[in-house]
Structures are given as C-alpha cells and as structure tokens.
Image 1 (cartoon, rainbow, N blue to C red):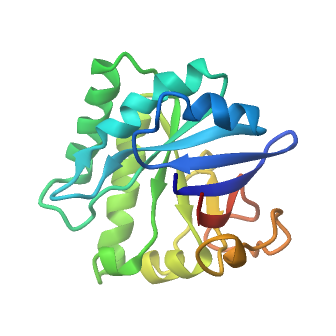
Image 2 (image 1 turned 90 degrees about the vertical axis):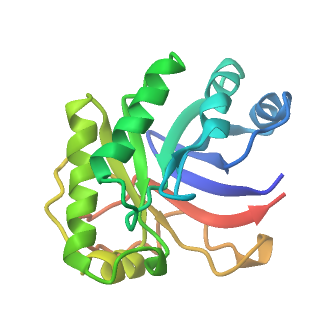
Image 3 (image 1 turned 30 degrees about the horizontal axis):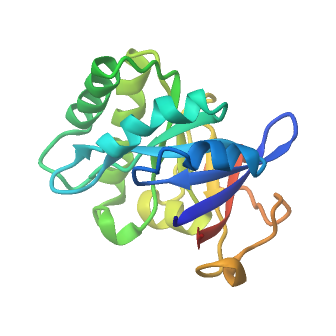
Length: 205
C-alpha cells in the first residue's frame, strides 16, 4: 500500500495517512491498530476534464466505521473546459448521492505544470472553488507549499480566515525522503502564519 504520512496540528500531534485508491477491507482497521488517527481520501481527480474519484467516496464509510477521522481532498483540473463551479457541483452531487455529509475539504494546489501559466486565472479558479463550496456549507482548506503557491498564484492572500493550510515538505520518496514530523520548518507564505497539517513523507508502504 503506497501511502503519504502526515502530522496534524490539532489539540495534540497525531499521525494520518493519505489513501488515493480503494483499500482492502481490513486496511482501515489495520491503520487504526497501528496508531493512525485519520485518513485523507481523494474524492475528485484531474483525469480527463476532471471527475469524481469513486474510490475515495467508497472509502469514506469503511474508514469511519473503523474509528478513523476522515478528511477529503479534491484534485481539480484547472485547465479543463469544465468550470470550477461545474467540478464542485459534480463532487457535491456525489456526496449527496452517496449519503455522505462533508463539512470541510482540501483543495490540492500543487504541481505548477498542471496549472495555467496565467497566475491570475489560477487564483480566480481557486477563489471560485472556495466560494462554490461555501454556498454548499463546506469550508475549503488548501494543500500546497510555499514554492507551489508562489508559482501557481504569485503568493496570493485574502482567501478568507476560514481557509486553512495543509503544506508538504518532503525531500524524496520513501523513508529516506522524510522531513521532520513537526512544524519547525514552516515559514509563513500567502495568507498563512501557521499550518493545520503537514505532509512529511510520501510513498511509504
């Protein structure tokens, strides 16, 4: 199982894992028994012009019933012919059809090559996603880091006080690429003076 490991800045530090594929039936209980507290599930993917990630949607209930906290994130397609509103509406409809109640999610803003060269256009897309989710009673956080945010949005701020940050700081794949499992390497950027979640490792089994 390829996974990404996080440490979250909540009331206390805790570990979480990102799963972007359908997990075996026992994977969530196994994670729980190995001291993970939360799973991050991708529920929208950039494939084609953007599409609901049914694997992520289907993982929500098993993770919940295993006693894990559940966070969901959207990897939108900012260069798609589908508008930001259309992509959000697709995902909200999938939540409703699946009987899933979501109060908050994360928007992935990484990999500058997957975004428009026009930073103003990128910012308008991000703002539209956040605004559309707000109209559906869902708050949006941003998954990015200072380099990606600078390249994609020119270090934009002013998204709203409710927009939290999940940042990544990884030196490479696997255990040897881990950064420290804390927030000591965080430096303010954009509108954020602190972060809620940190990714410090990726692609570990």
